[in-house]
Amino acid sequence: GAVVSQHPSWVICKSGTSVKIECRSLDFQATTMFWYRQFPKQSLMLMATSNEGSKATYEQGVEKDKFLINHASLTLSTLTVTSAHPEDSSFYICSGRGQLTDTQYFGPGTRLTVL
Amino acid sequence: EDQVTQSPEALRLQEGESSSLNCSYTVSGLRGLFWYRQDPGKGPEFLFTLYSAGEEKEKERLKATLTKKESFLHITAPKPEDSATYLCAVHPIKAAGNKLTFGGGTRVLVKP
Image 1 (cartoon, rainbow over the protein chains, first blue to last red):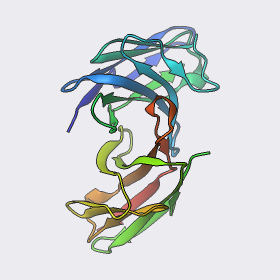
Image 2 (image 1 turned 60 degrees about the vertical axis):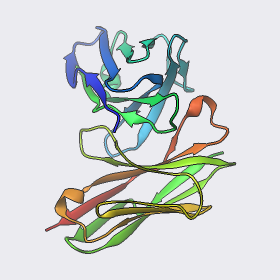
Image 3 (image 1 turned 45 degrees about the vertical axis):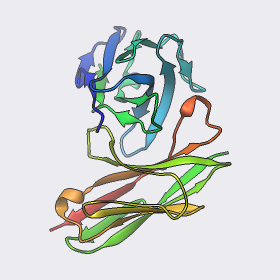
């Protein structure tokens, strides 16, 4: 199956700092990438959708200026959490979808803890 | 509005005790239905895609089926390593940006 990686797998930062999370499709070209957030014992919550070379489309209620998404190539998307606060602590998961498939393949996730 | 409901929320099984998970969906038109497995602290792992009513897919002890209103994930003679949360998601035909709509998941615990 298709493989998606995320880096880092976990990060701890101080309140007010920015954190960048990378999402890479290792063996396919991800024309569309998705970013999700997941709280304990809850399902996935879609934050934004990005197509390579285009601006991301954010879900209602997600702050565009706080969660910056860049999809610069067909294998790399980044999520930057700007001026992080403790309430941004969560499990962030990305997924990639190729051009000829409907299936989203997920990365292993990044645990963000903001102190 | 597209909706996906999974039941039960949690399921405790003895090793070898077969059971089924349900995923009921309401969409204006279905492009595809997906099953994923998620272990604690990890991202979802793709299991199956189903496209049309009557379709069935199998993988080891898992079998997914699809009707016009629901999908079942049958676990036959489960082992402790089958313990995980199983997520169902639908891809509506009219989904903007090819978004998936996820159900709440079913947490499965298989005891030896």
